[in-house]
Length: 319
Image 1 (spheres, rainbow, N blue to C red):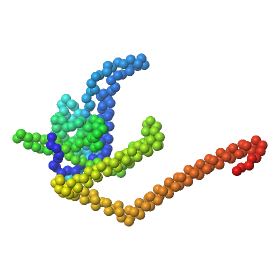
Image 2 (cartoon, rainbow, N blue to C red; image 1 turned 135 degrees about the vertical axis):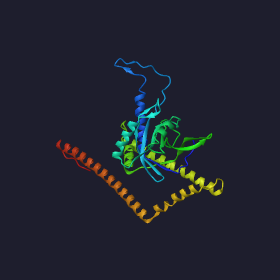
Image 3 (cartoon, rainbow, N blue to C red; image 1 turned 30 degrees about the vertical axis):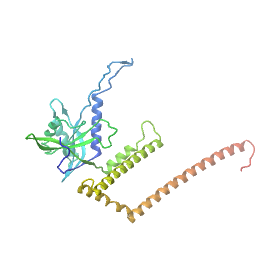
Image 4 (cartoon, one colour; image 1 turned 90 degrees about the vertical axis):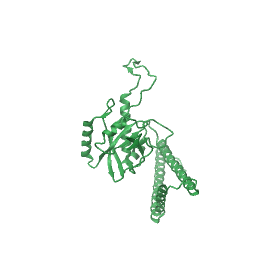
C-alpha cells in the first residue's frame, strides 16, 4: 500500500457518514457478541462460562453515496450491504435494490465507493473493491477504526483510493491513502449542536453541562493555539533556510491570512458592538428580573407574616 494518493482529488466527508458507520458497527457488535455470562431465569445461576480471550471485533460493510463535481468528491450518506465472508462477495441483488430506492429519494447522488471497519486495509478488501468497479470505475474506500486510542486527536477515518502500480513486473491494484476534510451543511450543524446540548441521562445539572461545554471550547482553543504555533515555527524555519520552501503550503497560508482583514472592517466592528451591547442588555434585563422576583417574594412573605400578626390582636411598629 502506497503512502499517499497522486490523483489530485479533493474529498469532503459529511458527519452523517461517520455516524452511520459507527451505528452500524455498534449494532452488529452488540448482536454478534452478547454478554458472556447470562442469567438463567430468576434463580441467578450463570449458564455461560467466562471466556479468557475476547472474540475479535466484527467487520461491517456498506456503500457511500454522494456527488463528484470535477476534482471534488463529496460524500453525503451511506447505506449497509450484505457481505458473505466465506466467498468475499456482496449480495448484488440487495445492492441493486438499495441503489434503486436511494435513487428515487436522492436522484443526484451516486455510489462513490464503500466503507468498512478495521485498523487497516486488508488483502480481502480488494475483492470487494474490484466488485464495485462495474458501478464506479474508481471507487473510494472509507475505513473506520473502531478501536479507542486516547492519544489520537484526529478522527479514526481513513479514505483510500486504488491505483495501478507495477510490482515485480506485474501491474497490480493497491490502496493508497487520500486526505479529506469534514464538510457540514446547516441541518448537520443544527443536529450536532442539538446532540451536544442534550441533557445527560444521569440527570446532570445545568452547571455540569456548562462546565462540559466550556471544557470543550477550551480544548478546541488550546488545539487551535498549538497548531498555530506549529505553523509559525514551520514558517520561521522555512525563512531561515532550515527546511526547503514549499510553495503549495505558502499559498494556503497566504489564503488564510487574506481572510483576517475581513474581521477588521468597520462593518464588522459595528455588527460586533451591536451584538455585544444586545448581549449585555439581555444580561441586565435578566438581572433586573431576578431582583424583581426576589423583591416580590420578600414583600409577599412580609405581608403574610404581618397580616397573621395583626389578626392576633395588635399592630406593631414597622421599621
